[in-house]
Image (cartoon, rainbow, N blue to C red):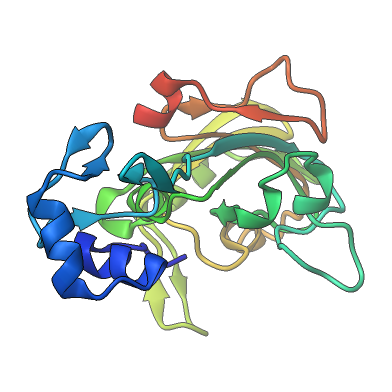
Length: 233
């Protein structure tokens, strides 16, 4: 998932086998274009999505991909698994092996899953510093109690990791259904938080990540490209 950034002259030399001294001459003559513009600076930084041409020949033309998937229960958030079908197996895209998962969901959790080949975008989305909210619909085995709301808002101490969770928002929808908003993603966090009340989670479904909301027209197991507005959100 590392960002593939490099200096322009080094990339051209490594791609073509031309020594860097000659690459600099090519740049000086205006024979290199980056994203449709003549490039002359040897120190120019390019990334995996920079469109690079040398004397009219395309050296790199990767396009970023941003995908929304309606993850089913029983499918793992992984690229390869020996026991279960993976979310990658659900895709029919030619570039699916180039994608990585942005914020995994457990085997028995359904809902919005994002995939991309843009590591900088995924890091911004999942970085704890940005505190991007994730909204889940939770179905419980036992009736909910209003006291849950304050307990979630205060955060809970997990002795095994010796951490206290960040404040979470809990909204009671009906006797056995709640909406939970998290700004972090601890291991089985929602199930463990309700476990404090000895109330098992029966179903867990992610509705949104930040301003990206699961498309209601997307059937379970289906996927689509994000719109530009969703990507920028």
